[in-house]
Image: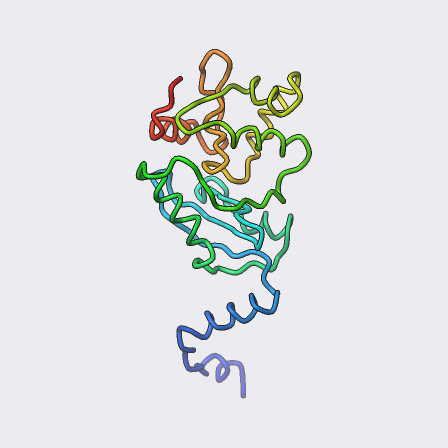
Length: 197
């Protein structure tokens, strides 16, 4: 067979569920480390990635052009699209965006966070819905009152925004400060929560 003949050969299409079965089997055999799915939100499209431990990444896909590449480099290249594994996260986010949920209960995987960043983000999770704190207070709660800039850096690298509510952290004096994917999103989240500033 020559090259033109090879191009003309068409294989029959596989039934829709073949890929699903393949992914399911790979998961059962421990060949998948990360499953992901997407969802629409008032903030734009989101990518959700989970491990067996919990949610490891929530990414604004218009801001983060290669979230799967980042996960492959930092955790494992064994990643599959398996939206059903993200159902619990999507459900809680949908409830949050409609005002029905004020606290997230999905388990989190902290693998992408290191050192002082873990303390900063754990302090951030403790900020209640509808309330705000400051970079200084988060640094104090994280155990290092002088590390205000380091706290800001850790918040800027938050791999699970919204659920780890870095949007609730403001400058001393009430200024919004920064937000990695755009200050408009931070303002939208604070407005959604009716945050007292």
